[in-house]
Length: 187
Image 1 (tube, rainbow, N blue to C red):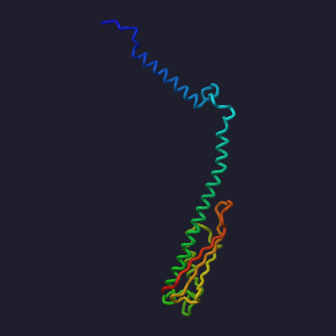
Image 2: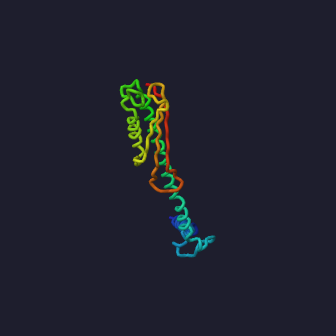
Image 3: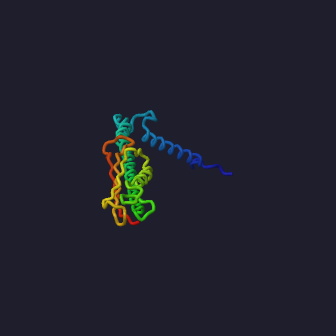
């Protein structure tokens, strides 16, 4: 067998040299990312006065973002309540327009109606408004018959006045909500 030529690098030397170079590059990259962990000086281009800036910037950002998130939640709940109460007013009008004088269960001011004050309409509105997840004890429902009759084609108006009670007291949220729905009695 021929003797190996010592001038040629062995495969293990080449791999070892490559591994040492990669380890040096990785250590330099880690030093650039985390200068304090290496125990050496701060990387070039960075100053010691910038070390706590991340904490300050995060605190200032959170002071703005957290109230904004709560305000957005409250605005969503106000919009949801407004939508549910509007649907409740429309449902009360639907009940009133199909329970005119031609109905067996009449609601309205006409003679022969068992519910001249519209209490059945108010009960329907309050049961539909219960889906708003709020305390509705301060909600007022007004049922009006502008034509002073409940026979077709008389008109009916249902108006809801509600003082919105926010979950979180934040500025800029309206407290008073007024919704109304109108229709004509068809049956």
